[in-house]
Amino acid sequence: MGSMTAPAPLLETDRTKLRRAAGRGSFDRDLANSILDEAYIAHVGFVVDGTPRVLPMAYGRIGEDLYLHGAVGNAMLKASISAQVCVTVTLLDALVLARSAFHHSMNYRCVVLYGEALRVDDADEKRAALDAVVDQVVPGRSSEARPSNDQELRATLVLRLPIVEGSVKVRGHGVVDDPDDMELPVWAGLVPTVLTTSPPVQDEAQAGSGLTPPSPDRLVR
Image (tube, rainbow, N blue to C red; front, top):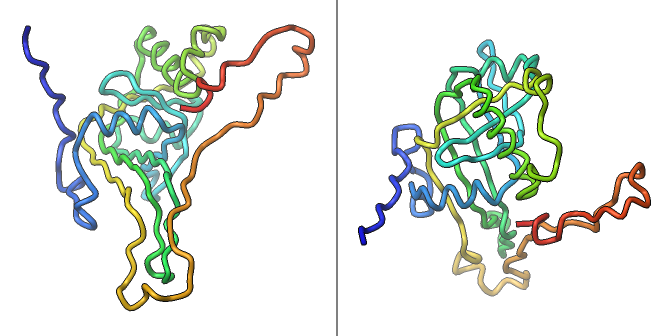
């Protein structure tokens, strides 16, 4: 049996070189993909007419490509076609409360990607990308909901960002305080943060239908 080939790391460039707190960073592709698969929102940065813009967007991942979507009439999104973009995805794991204000922090997992946003025109790839965006919200949801029709596909702009150039940064430890502050009468420690959902609220138009919502283990990863 042949040995498994490790996935290529994210590309280290001048844009992704780890400088501040470099010990928290890596170019581990598997770690990057795991963060992308767990999160829900990406912040997409690009430049329009010389002005930087950042949009929070839903997204989906297929293999080593990240897909973004929006209305074809979205001027800011259209401006990013074939342009360099920066995509950031962050998960908050804990609040770090220190004895001093200076050393307060957060535990987090973060991926930053750079690259050219490529317009997707192939109909099959476009459908697969939109299914991936839906499944990022609730795994398997695309097989339950009505698929996008031709009119909806024409009204939707899909961009593909190859997951090539980027980096990962993770903070996962406790409080770091100055030695002189250790005896201060101030509570210090971690406050873990967890994403949860409230009980689903069914659409009133479905009252009495007997339809059941997705199971809780599908709603929160």
